[in-house]
Length: 259
Image (cartoon, rainbow, N blue to C red):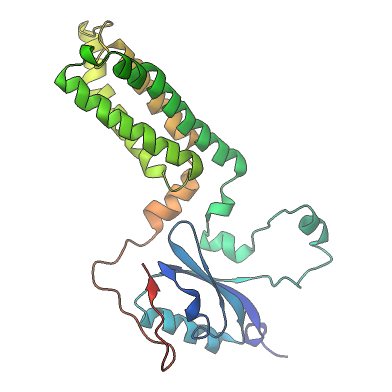
């Protein structure tokens, strides 16, 4: 009986960085799909294990970081069992994907994405109403130090608007929001509150700031997709330190890595 691993199978190889579609022929006709998180998916039928190892060697020769190589069910497999799920548009993870910890953007639930977008909207509206609006209407009341703070908050609000469109790409903005507010609460807010030195009448550094910081410290962890963060910010290999090595796949062609 033939070994099932020596029969043609569909594999999906994920590498760090973006590849142009002109590399498809060099990778044996695999479909090349750039992802929103900076990776590239190489998907297609692989004849046997020797062919798979040949593909992985080509990835190595390009100097690209290999994230995962998983075998996936081809579209024609299990057609009867999967008919209902296909009709409902439901995506099912294979066992290999679960074991490999593949956690991509399409595996962050729609509900979680809306939570993230709601958080960005909350940040934009809160800053516009309580900080930026009064500063724009009454600039004469701002000290030079307050002007610097308002400028930083304005930039923060603009970036949060971008987060409404790209909630996962702008996750570092939420990380910054959480970290700076946690530091301020622990280093300044709580000591001032305990000593009775927290001024309720100032716009920056008083009771209002403590309330806003506590909201951020509580809400950001609640909306963050921690599985996605673990895979893409903790387990994922870091960006290269040296120069990218490129290999020409065919004589006369000049494919390039997409920066």
